[in-house]
Length: 422
Image 1 (spheres, rainbow, N blue to C red):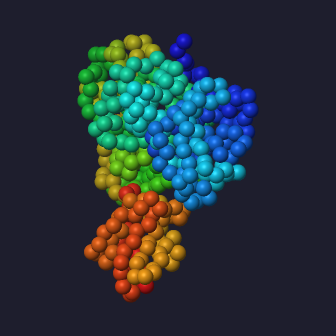
Image 2: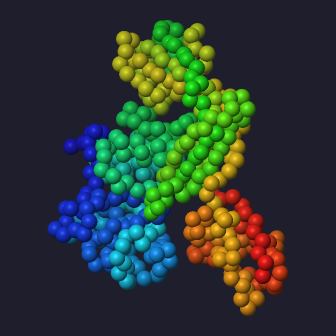
Image 3: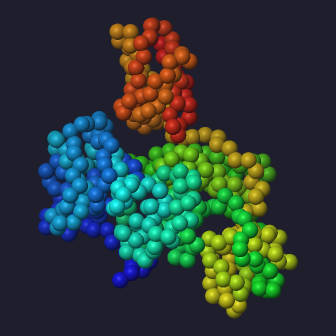
């Protein structure tokens, strides 16, 4: 039987086991994320990562220190159902002390990590929730995901309706979705609205009204992404401004896209969002005899419309066949610029504690604003020698005493220059 959107998400619960140390839903994990596992039993050795097998574990920390004594057990639980369990060499008494960086669900046939919007939504709706979709339904979303190289990841650990849970997942990846949306989900806002195959004219659309909405204009956007599931807060953020701030003044807005992991994709989505809402948006409502679907672009050649194209957002039954609502930005937001990043290599945490000098060797540790080490950061010494940090955020140079300049460049962070005196 096919599930309904109003049905509850079918996450299993630890209470199904004959004995359980705590009550919690068995979460679903996609892409590369860092999380805190749940106790699988009372031993402190076994910790549940997900209610399904995962592709692997990248690292484990206990009390903030990375450890080597662990193993991944992709197996079955006490009821014979699949789970992913972390096994520690030494017991830990409190889950708040443990963080695990994992690679989540994988394709059942190819083993591919499910870290793209099309892969995630198909698996979520079909394999987890039991909805009736075909792989081909996601062709448009797949083409867009592959063309943009967007990387996503996240955790579902709340029992709520399928509709509400999918709303959260889609919004977290910068998408709009719905039961009748063309292609299941579309990037939102769109990069542009082009002419569609359906044209709305006076003959097939006798009633049409258009209104320019300026109350929702945003000219300064606080955008967060790459959610840290272990800490329960955004991992990265940026502030963008549109050129239209000179015309409308500063109007602040906020968007959270916690499932987007790649900085390039986050910047593209944030810029697209501000380009759309950084100026007025035209809202068109009409009765038409044409068949249109949410997410579809339509051409408009109508004496009552000031715009020639829009994207359909809502369709209901009407006297002629359909009553449709469509939107289009006026495109006057102007240039979009990133003015700051609130998370990055932190000068506040780059001090004496971040480097050690002994026997002619400088060992420097690159950390983020919370003091967490950043691996594979590029560190250039005195404009000459460049090396990458290891998985503990450390890099080493052979140098003499005196003042030295370090230029630190990490993906997704602002470039920082630090002077150390040895």
